Image 1 (tube, one colour):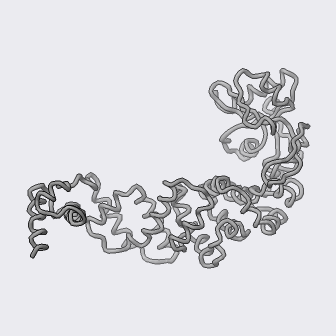
Image 2 (tube, helix red, strand yellow; image 1 turned 60 degrees about the vertical axis):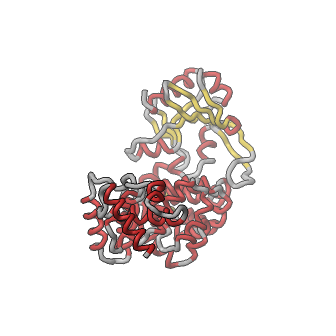
Image 3 (tube, rainbow, N blue to C red; image 1 turned 90 degrees about the vertical axis):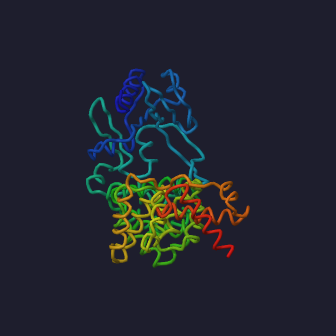
Length: 403
């Protein structure tokens, strides 16, 4: 059973029990665009208690807001009661929720293209807010007064930009003006929620459009103060045109901060509450900028190619070069050399360990570490390839040092 089939089966059962039930939100928008929705949400006149009573397996994820997850043949379908909302003290959640009708439910949603319903049994679109017309015009417009909609959830400002990046639509003037006017409020939203929206924006088909809006609306500098610097902001817009279609979030953020010093970028990124691995990824990319443009030894090449972030580093440097309209020749040479390493061991086991080095005469402590590091560079450079060669190299190294 597909997610769509599961949602329709839930709708049939709710209808049979005497309730109104429709597909709602983003899935309706995507279907009308001819796209396959990621998931299918159901909106209904049944209360959360009535939804739970009608299905054997449910999860009460947000019952007080009217949201229940129904488990149907291995699928999870969000089923929400038609509701109206009032009071948004924290700029995120309603202070009061009341269950109501489909039209009122549509009026409390964010954008017109997300506020439509669809009756899959009758094959009918139910549109109370002009969403279908805006979809044809390729417009992102809030339902009702944009200032009111954004005051209900400040993240909607960033969501408007993300939708523009995903769909390639333009943001309607009043909606855009409201984002610009109230952009400072985005700082009140949790970093985790902001990060989720940014990750979707950077992965979107019209990424450049989204990045430009992020800068022009003022959202970027409210989230990351370093973007008050115009040259940094301008670079972020330009480089977005030269990144690969499919990119990691780490590469996207490193490119976005591509004109910043690594330390400044990492300080600004603290707001997103990223994982340790994500921060390590971004820091590596920013600190290693220009490294691939140098005259790399064989050992240096092996070490950098072995890094899990090498491909992202290559993509970042390539995008930087293109943004600055600089030559790619040095970078392409590194690519050819990296390709020639295919099938070769990039990080072989050291030929000698610390105990063996001490036995050969290296002093315990810093000298062992230094000799070990130098020997490993020789091994990676393929000037020392066997254990006897390593022993001979160490003896000569220590003899010279003593001399």
